[in-house]
Amino acid sequence: MRILIATGIYPPKTSGPAQYAQNMHDFWSKMGHKVWVETYGIENHLPTGVRHLWYFFKIIPKVLKTDMVFGLDTFSVGFPATLACKIFNKKIVIRTGGDFLWEGYVERTGDLVLLRDFYNTRMHNLSFKEKMILFLTKWTLNNVDLLVFSTRWQKDIFKKPYELDERKISIIENHYERSHMNTLPTSLESGTKYFIAGTRPLKWKNITFLKKVFENEEIKSKEVVLDPSNAPYKKFMEKMSRSYAVILVSLGDISPHMILDAISLNKPFIVTEECGLLDRIGSVAITVNPKNEKDIKEKVSWLLDESNYVGQTKKIKNFSFTHTWKDIAQEYENLFKKII
Image (cartoon, rainbow, N blue to C red; front, top):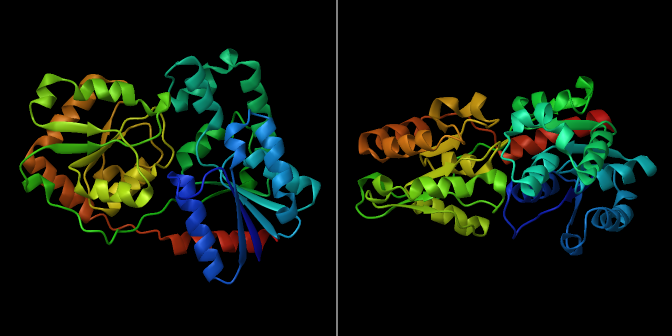
């Protein structure tokens, strides 16, 4: 097959979609397919609407040559790619990723509404731009050949407001695979205990709230430091491997790669209870209410106890589920063949 991957972000930039795009490119290429990637360049500096139009025209030459377009979001590349496919009668599959509308709303308003509550409680507060995004996203999701979610949690949130057709929905779980990188036995070391929280500086990621927890004197007295900085993927993994633990307290995270990477490194982690992965990782997760400072502080303190830390590490080492990038690439190939 000839496959075009449409993604807003690609390595060396770091994010879940960037990893996904690169791995699908590499594995589909190994499987004998011809694969192109079109990502954002100048579009990052253009306003909404203009960047979509620019990207639409940019991808047309490759759309004309493809059998299948694979989009890695629902709006930034999803809308222009779906429009191009409708016009030129090409097949398109979109993997949903995050929620562009909710993320933008929280960023604009500072209203820290949970993702699972957003569509039921905030539709009357949308700006004209956000109403257009809602309309165009709904059009996109109902005009793809197949819509792929990584979690049932997100599918259940999206199904009603976007009026999705269950027959055009599939679920392919995210990547679960052990890293070959060595990790340090940090629970047995003296010195500073670093909690990795590196993520994009967006309000829904709830970093400001998390920083308040780590400014608590009781936490600081235990030589604990929060590290919210980011880095290119390889360096970030190296930093995570040297850390004490990983922590994520966002207001809604579909399938956070940082937590999956923590598991791959056998690294204990604290994760928001507003997360789509809990059906799979609940047995090894320490969950917190992302709006409850006391809850987060208590869970951090609990993990700082060495016996608790060793126990959590053992649980994660015994977590046996695997879902490799090769598995994922094969599952998509099977779906593509059914559509084409």
